[in-house]
Image (cartoon, rainbow, N blue to C red; front, side, top):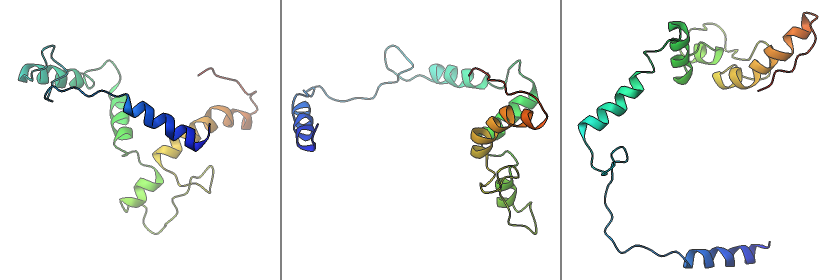
Length: 130
């Protein structure tokens, strides 16, 4: 498809849109009638509060919270908070050329730890289904 045919098709699609003549208004999607109420807002917030009332161990809950807030003590975070005094090295100790951050750890390093570290210990590679 060429650019001209794409633009022509796009314009034709846009011209087919029919707008409503009714007045726009706000709707609260958590109520069937669309009207906001304190009760429905409370119920929504109460559901979210149950995240902390979990069967999961407190360590896992706190670590999850730290992870979501980017508060895991990676070299990058420790350097930013001036905990690593006397060094500016924030590189990953395994990869060396990549800054050690939460994203790097949970995207790249987990795969390395799952598949490559066992090879160093003499174990065979095991494919784990995702």
